[in-house]
Structures are given as structure tokens and as C-alpha cells.
Image (cartoon, rainbow, N blue to C red; front, side, top):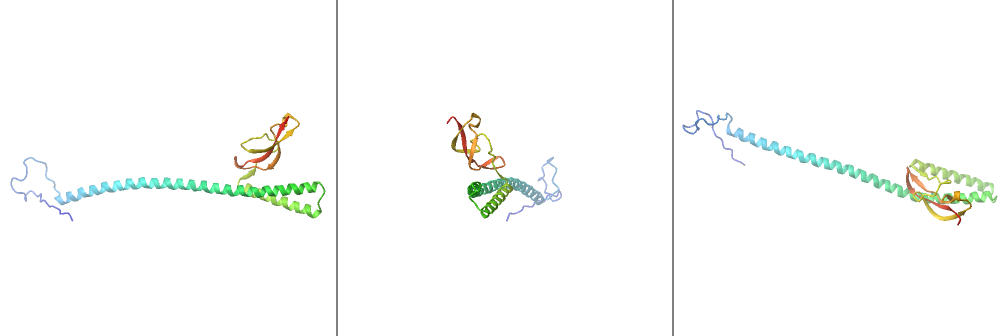
Length: 196
């Protein structure tokens, strides 16, 4: 523990000759009060420094928390998209089954029960597409469009009779899908080639 030195500054308690003639006006506070005030001022300064450091750390923590939230959100979105791409393969197989069944119906090779089954499968397909739209995923429209390598993947070329069909999509191997305007999976298409 620190020793506190007490100096009596009362004018009648001073001995002759100890006060300097014409010196500063004597303090009316006892010396231990001055010492305590000095310590208090030092502690106030320390507290202000601690508060400043705390505010800086708190700001850094808030920034880290916001950055972590943003990164977590991006990671969740990446996982969601990866899962949805896997589901699109199932939808492609459903589309192929529907196309094959529709072709059999067109050729008249089916019974009435088969046609009812086809209608049921078509309803399942529509329900699946509606659920995907609920997640913000939609099929990329391909009808008569020009081939766009950003949205389509050419898997084959097909000879076309007129130059107007050159570079246009003439067949769909697998539908493409987009989330908002971002391509989730490009469409696999057959592209028309004039003069081939």
C-alpha cells in the first residue's frame, strides 16, 4: 500500500521562514486531497482510454458479425442452388418419359389407361415446375430463339433449309433454368446450321 504524506498548510502551523516571501497563494486543500484528486484524474483518463478501446472493439465485432452473416447467406444460397440442380436432372427424366409416352399416344399405340397415366404424369410435371417457381426458378424460354452461349449449350447441329433458321434453336435436349436473370443451368440444345 502506498504511504500518503500529509503536509499541514495552515498558516499558523507553519514555522517561521518556511513560506517563501511573495510566493504562490497557498492551497487551502490538505495535501492528501490534492493527491486523491490527482489519482482521480489519472483514473478518469484510464477509463476514457478503456472506453475508446471498447468502442473500437465493439465496432470491429459488429463488422465481423455482418460479414459472417453475409458469408453464411451466400453459402446457404450456394447449397440451395446445388440441391436444385440435382433435382433438375430428375425433372429432365420426367420430361423424357412424357415425350416418349406422348409419342406413343400420337402413334395410337396406347390404351385409354395409358393415356390417363400420361395425364397424371403431366400433372406431376406441372406441380414440380410450380414448386420450382416458388423457389424463384423458371425454365429458360427457348422457342425460336437465337443460340446464346451464355444461356444455351449446343450439343449438336442440325441442317436447316433456310438462312433464317441458321443459328437458331431447333431442338431441345434438356431445358435450361434460371434464378431471376442468373442461369442456374444452361439449356442443352440442337442449333440450326444452314448449308451444312
